[in-house]
Image 1 (cartoon, helix red, strand yellow):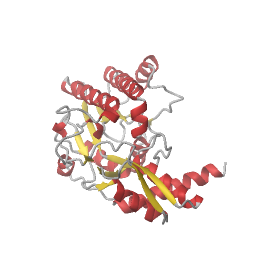
Image 2: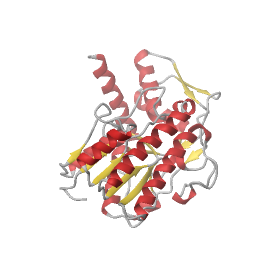
Image 3: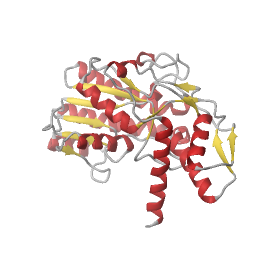
Image 4: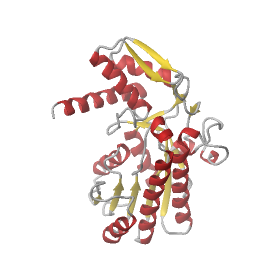
Length: 315
């Protein structure tokens, strides 16, 4: 990829896509192609085909997807499977037919089995059953990873699937029905402080362990992989390298947001996988080391949420 490459970022308004855009801008790349959902519905195959025939990007970052937290996944399995399959198939096939030579697919740690050795190596996928709460999303992501890899094996492009751990950062979704755990907890505790609430109820037992990576670190890791990829079309985990329990995370967020009340755990709600810690050996081999620590990252996400609520309040 050079400074004159035509680069399409699918999902540029999302958390990952916007981080990729920031990194491209910082690197001096100017020939960037973006389309909002209103301008291009990636579920519509004829529209996607026409777009690629017209624009013919050299490089594609596929960060567009239907995503959500545990409740959204549990209650919309069919939609998560169908929509993500459609987006992936439409974009990849049109890109392959119209000269794209480098393709970066954003996978998910949900592809890994519910019960597998920790930390999780790339070769563990498809070795045991999925976590049932996000099975539809996981199946779609595996299909995308395979299609990207098959097209690479066929010599169509230099394609790689990046598998990040739990992400957070600018552009995160704070909707309680659709957000991931970090953003949901930030909203709960920040709102509790603002309303003067004496307690906050969190889902599950708090016992599961999760690994969190700031999205700016992910973007940096992706571009390091583009510069040096000794793994061919094999998937590459990009993780922080350490994990915390959800309960520990809640106490960090409570402290950073200024909440001093009671934290209540609703054990009737699902926990999801017991642990998801990525083995990031491949990413470390190309020199990737996260720069943003968890506590600093939590502080920045709280500030991001407060900024977003202030903006909404002034409208």
